[in-house]
Length: 177
Image 1 (tube, one colour):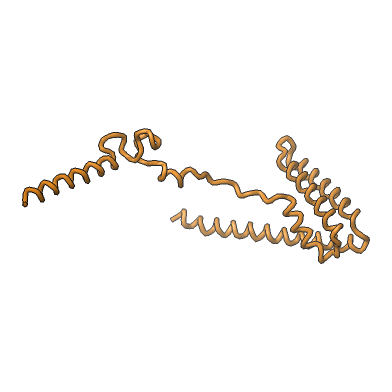
Image 2: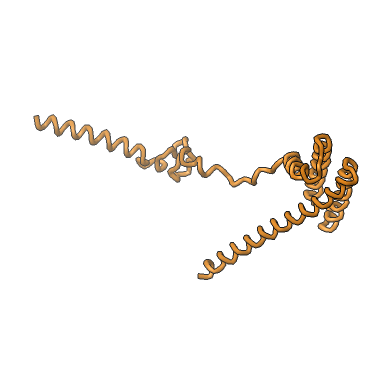
């Protein structure tokens, strides 16, 4: 009875050792798919381990200009007393203007000053187009809305700059230590 147990234990341990050595390399390409399944450079990584490394940091998705224009008009609608037709027309004008502005900003052939002049001209043109859809009373309300809108944008950008500066101030002492 004892020799049978010994033989059974020996066969079992050989099977376990064989499967473990096959999994962990056995001297051939360090295992884990080095033999044609993985990268094959002996680093010992298979496809399941590579999934997390394949994703590259991507840029945040750009929000469509139509969506941005719609949000601006939604904010503008109660303050300027726009009807639905005016809202649609102004949304289209703002969308076109934002597309043009994006093209101007991406244009690498013109200098920074030229871009600023072109954007200013585009802004004036957009204002004229929007004013064409508004009554004189609404034009005044639109101008105050846009002034407030610009102020809100400036304070948001200042907050972003301040928070970036604070983060840099916090990170700088850590780097010095």
